[in-house]
Length: 315
Ligand SMILES: C[S@@+](CC[C@H](N)C(=O)[O-])C[C@H]1O[C@@H](n2cnc3c(N)ncnc32)[C@H](O)[C@@H]1O
Image (cartoon, rainbow, N blue to C red; front, side, top):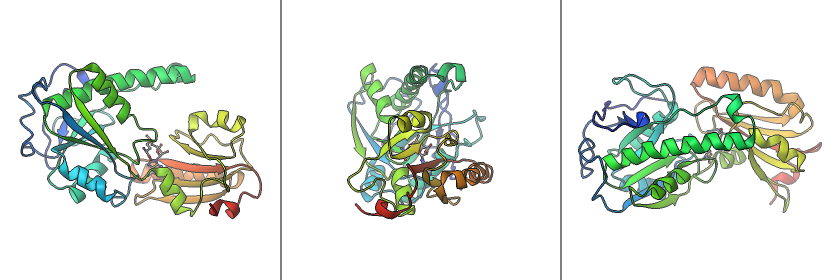
């Protein structure tokens, strides 16, 4: 990914929330009509803020829809989280997915400023996340910290906001929940609209020329963390997202259609019996991380022998 930085601006007067004491911006001066970030600390008088949550597709710069492009162009600025270790004041963040959003804006909505808000740290210790309840608690705390940081960033910048969301906002993305929290906090009045995007699971299906379920059948979408329980409950077609690993050693006879870094230069596709391809998949995950600085994968698992494309290609 290219580095589309134009400047690094700090917001020296940003208030005490540690997570939002600094923001990054693709512009040194504010976009016309948005006011001055260092003046308006309260958001007071800004009135109802229009917030477009814009699905941008899953990596390919041209996966975005025309209506989503219009929404980006109409915004006074765009807002996105910046993940990863903090960088110095003069360094552009290393987060490759933030960089991809900047590239996307440059291509489709040039002139619209991208403001990056440092993402609060999430507790990933195994003791805090070992059960689903613990995991949920940790995520909810993190959402609250994010809501604070985003609220502050928006309070500092009046105007209509676009939030470019990876894939589609409906799948494993917390943006809508965070905006709900900001509304509940009562400091900012938000009018939120969603523009759908192409999710990674759709790109996976397209690349492998797949229908995700058998004729009239069911597809379950879940996370790597919950795969075992979904399989135990009898699911036959399972799309798995949010994988820190490939927890499929026990599913030797299932068929897998796998996609890594879809839409990006490193896009990799593999299909086959799990027992035959698992080692290869693990190697691809390592390679993608090493070569491209990030790896994201999604896969369809289909139960049992004879799970070749067959029925799956028919509606
Ligand atoms: C936080 S979720 C966001 C999903 C997103 N909202 C969507 O609709 O695709 C991130 C997960 O989506 C999947 N994913 C997103 N982009 C991907 C890509 N380009 N290639 C493969 N998997 C991807 C991976 O499972 C990753 O762990």
